[in-house]
Image (tube, rainbow, N blue to C red; front, side, top):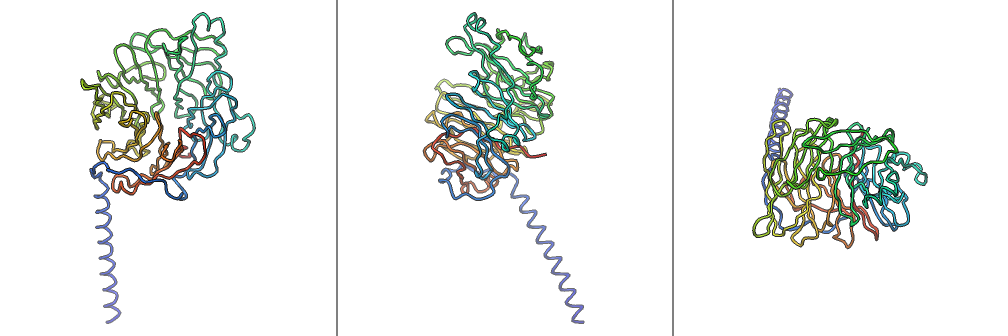
Length: 435
């Protein structure tokens, strides 16, 4: 009888425990449905002691700690910092970008006197750090002195570089400057990442893009007319390219197929500027900034979402600045597509702040202050951490921050310093998830 009573009691206890666990799961689920909270009044405190691991994976960045900017690599917790490139004298490396499989880095380098596009294999660069482990993909020496003196112009490759999802090509902008250093035209090119073939050149003409192949070693005519193209980005499925285009009629974001067909104006804003955009991880949406200066010189900027299937536009967040020049230099979706990370110029017109917001515009949260002008930020592969540059401790260093609880507990945000040197560090780029 006692044994039977004991078994019944245990059974009842198990049922109660299961019910309690269900209540807890339901509560946690409801708690995680994007609560709207005010922007925190205080900024994150000074960096704390370094925990390990941080975010997982590797971070590529650039540093001038050896005198000029080179590409470096470190663990997500700041350990095992390794110099990957060895450009010397007055030259520098910049704009490093990971291939989608995380095995290669593309970057710009002026080691050949001109700013050219290079790539390196990560395994070879780490295993043989002192060897020549780079492949040069472009060569501006083909723009000979006769052409240069005739046109009194110079070609260059401005940032950024964009890898195709399959890793076979890089999209980049090639611009031409006059003798005063002003950019007078630019075009988009596709570059084979294995160094083969020539350059695939897009030319803007009467609201469409024509695609032609420039054979290796051929002299490329300067881009004439058609405004300016900038910031090419591949769609996640690799079938389309998006880019900024500016001319006398204004700025807009355009999307086209990789053969130049199907050119479509995505933004169609009519605003005075469109500054930055980013594909959502699933390719369904395009987030971008567009704004207009007001009569009182204030600037009203909208963070917008464009539905890539229907064309529907929605302003999810409106930002008003009391200064007339505002720079947005980082806009990145979290890996799960739920959040957006961006930077915005502070009211002093110099430094920038780092913000986090849900994709629907709710729960705007300021993460960090004292970011240098035109700063960048990057998500960790697991979506829990962000890496960014801050001058809070005197010079530009790289920091990491766990943002997994940023919306629920913004006061808990802590910046963790990853680099410690007397130089300047910039452009932290977290390695994509490994296949």
